[in-house]
Length: 185
Image (cartoon, rainbow, N blue to C red; front, side, top):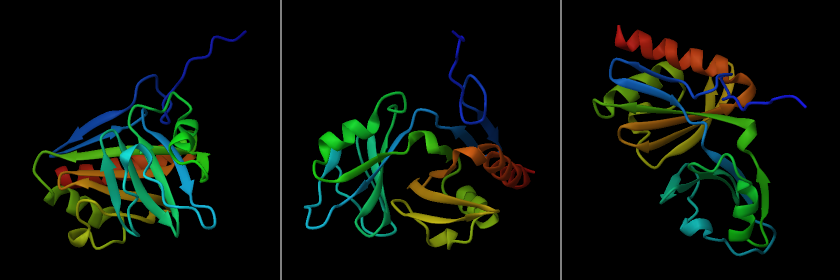
């Protein structure tokens, strides 16, 4: 039997971390993800105590969060739950809903600023086609970043998350790192 060892989406034994100027970029390898969709005539659940957000928004309750992905559809996040069957845990919290495991299909990069929100706004202006100044805490959207489709989540004034396809993790990291390096120069 092979001696298999887990690796991060960027191919290393440990998640990548980089600080450039006021910005710190961190690969969040511990983020568990599962999609949640209401079935016809189903009541809207409150999994893990979450109030599921409206279109364009993100909500947090403890170590769990959710963002809207479409009518009656959300992505549910579980910090530190990537190594378990997160979809099963979510299904228990949302009986009668359609739940699909998403953890291994996505990579999450968390970007923090030690200088408040201004560096994040400048980074978004270089990377994505959104109203960066108007994209405040608690907002989430799907947008393009270079040739990739990503989810953009403003977790706080000084924190931003970018979720993209796991197979494009290297390209996504390169785009974020290049833009952050230009801002730091």
